[in-house]
Length: 348
Image 1 (cartoon, rainbow, N blue to C red):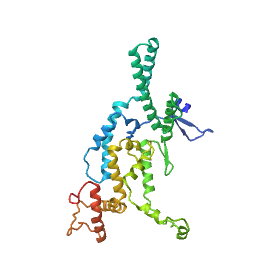
Image 2 (cartoon, one colour):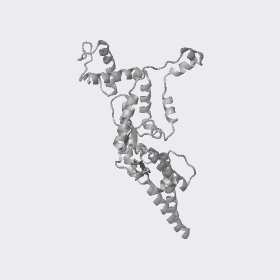
Image 3 (tube, helix red, strand yellow):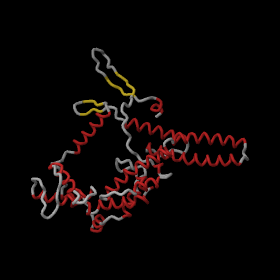
Image 4 (cartoon, one colour):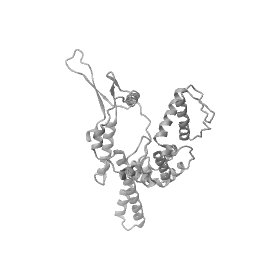
């Protein structure tokens, strides 16, 4: 780790030999040509000054639609307030902690020369408490970024965290990518586009010849009892959702939205009822797998057939040349689609 902290990052390119007996090597210092916009990431240290007020303000916003849609919109609305909170209190937290340490040393020197001065004693006590509080905040921040655990309390711990963070940045950096016909991409935009195309092709393939599990093997294995069957299909409760969320490590995030589980734990008094309703609605028959399938099917048919308006009713018909079965599926699925968008069938 010491070498990575002292030396800059380089990229090595092996050139063709030509008429030489040696292989030339070109070493270039790695410079980021295009700095991409940083995605939102929730910091655990935000759960202090004014955190609940910012979250409560955002979650009071009126959103129409299914419960999951409301949660997503409210989470997006919370980002602006949390960014303002970070800018106001935590933007230069690392520099402020170093300044607090220097101020504490100066006050303690004054206290050594005048140990009976009550004014200096009060300043030393206040500065000591401030430094301890923000030192803990900084270590929590560095631990979250480095995904490492404490080795000891003290200055060596912070140095270790900084080293881990730099190592993670070097490991996560993609400076070149070889794909397809041995084409090497070095531009960030090309690398990003190549990743997207690769996963589109990978996830877009449908496996036709899938090997089925042999029934004789399934029968001879251990099977669930009737009680276990009933336990698996019994409805979930609010306590089940809360226990599942609170069992997740605070530094873990479930998706690319930037919110770690620590956010939901600290703001559960505000977001708990919305998140619980969304999860239970998704797991229930009201918005289960069948309706989701119908909804996705409807969206695909609408896109393919370029339907601009669908009128639902006993005498209404889809104004496109579709089969009777497809028309019926669209009729059943459209309420699911419109409910997910926060509309009614008549508004669509």
